[in-house]
Image (cartoon, rainbow, N blue to C red; front, top):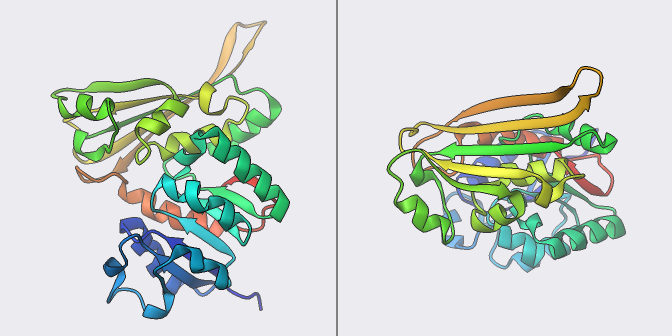
Amino acid sequence: MESARKVGIVGYGHIGKYLVDCILDHPNLELAFVWNRTPSVMQGKVEEGYILTDLAEFVHIEVDLIVEVAHPSISMQYGPLFLQHADYMMGSPTALADRKLETTLRKLSAEYSHAVYIPSGAFWGGEDIRKMADMGTLLGLNISMTKHPSSFKLLSPLMEKNENVVQRTVLYEGPVRELCRLAPNNVNTMAAGAVAAHNLGFDGVQGSIISDPNLPDWHVVEVQVTGPTNPKTDQTFTVKTVRQNPSQAGSVTGSATFKSFFSSILGATGKDSGFHLC
């Protein structure tokens, strides 16, 4: 009988709590540890034996997969150390917009034979886009995200622009790399797209975020893919998908994303070193 995979969770917000409960209920998974910046949040909800107060102490715990669902800064600070001991699933892949971090994680992944997993989340069609990137036929990828103003957590100058929104407003349109810096909590979907579209990367993939006060119950993600043009017919390969994710106003993460994250944990296994969507 195959032994249960040991999973450590970094972050105990809404998604982290959901994942911990799912892992404890799953027959093929075992909770290795849980860490949160504020440990008191976990008291009475997580057994003491699972709680880490110092994240660096994970090195003394047997773990197969470490899952970050806290903040991009976790990957900056601990990502290299995680990969020396286990596979790593980045719930905040906007951290990869930092070129130095991406290069470091790719190097350590190969050196220690541990995979880096990127959850697809609200990103639809990621594997097809990756295949096009592998073949060099992916020529363009545009991802837009529309949310209620209260569902955005932004840095200046987008924060101030969003605070003054009274009607549907495009807050940003341009390369995903800069958008990841300005909206690190909101555009993980776009970061996943940039990883899948590796021939375009964070500079070539285009992203836009739209603030709409008349959209209180949904997060809308549109993905548009462009491929080659047939020289005989002058027709261009295009695919456009629209995902409407139920959500409450003020919520950064849509409700459907919770189940998607846990599905990604189940799929985060069996891969060689390198970056993989799951």
